[in-house]
Image (cartoon, rainbow, N blue to C red; front, side):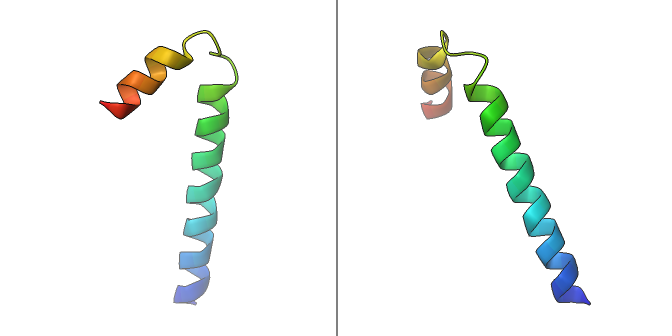
Length: 41
C-alpha cells in the first residue's frame, strides 16, 4: 500500500517537472540566455 503511494507521488513529481520544463523552454526561446543566468545564479 505504502509503496504504491510513493510510486504515484514519484510519477506525479516527474510529470510535473517535465511539464514545467517543457513550458519554460518551448514558448520563451528568445529569453533562453536570461533564463540560464537566473537558473545558474
